[in-house]
Length: 106
Length: 317
Image (cartoon, rainbow over all chains, first blue to last red; front, side):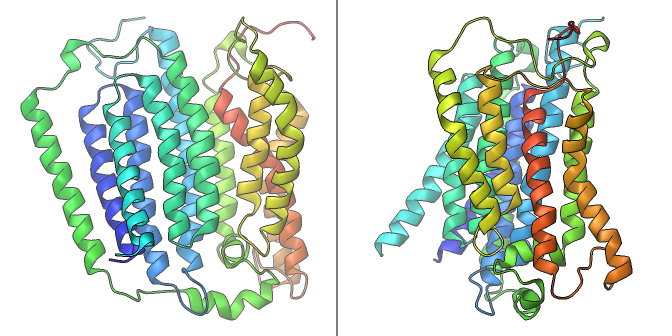
């Protein structure tokens, strides 16, 4: 098995782990963390596409690599906005639960 | 089995092990720290895929900056974990979720194993046109020339995120210094590092941004490293964060995308169209845009990490 295939399988497993965490963990920050695990798994699977597309003297296709770099930065932006929303929720309601029945009325 | 294969398998097991641990960790804070370790290990996997630019970005932004964001959030949310009993799932639901996720991973793994080798590629096109950009690093050429539109919009996304984060400020805090209230206690080692690291870090950051034209590196990675230096001095309170209504701060924030857009527009007049560069001076123009982008990235990332202004406006400092 090549390093690329192994990395692709790792990416597939990471997607599975990320979805599992998103589904079963209740804390929003943990969900966010799992969302990032899921995203990096997708990037990794895209990365093996780059590696298998290596041609014309390049070890890996530069186009998917550039897209992954853009993706990492955009994923960070989304995470930062989500963390800010979460901290604001905690500030105003004193809790971080996503369950509407448990949120204290203002 | 060769040594390198054993190392590859070991690395994959480590990555998955740390990822599983961040999900299972009892403490929120420990999970966030685990994520940083995970990101660094993942960047090694990117090195093994011969994607050094991605590895640098993953280490700097995916692991480093995201890690600081998650760790500080975990510290401020201390005590909110574990959740109420009503939010605990029944074992049956967990088993069902695990089964679903194993199925998803299995289908994706089958896709990986069936993938054509060699796969579809745009590498020959990049190689053919690389000379026209004057750049030696094909990834930078894709980011700054062939897919420049994506990169410019991504910079706009970063600014939109800053606007989103700032718009969460309480009414009476608007216009004051960005970030949460300072911690009362003084941290000696952190202050020491905040004075020791930035001179080295700034030189390395500028180097990485500069060599990105021809070698792995570039505006993102260099900008993220500069941002890391800014975050250290902000967290150690060596320097106070700027007030969010400062005009110079806004100019710095939009400098990168604004310069990108401006030169892109000039492309209508002197080259083939929007975001096209005139023959012969593509490389200097790209480096010029990148210099402004480094500046904007170095300002945007720390502002996203420290969050909205969070204390009532005080008098002049």
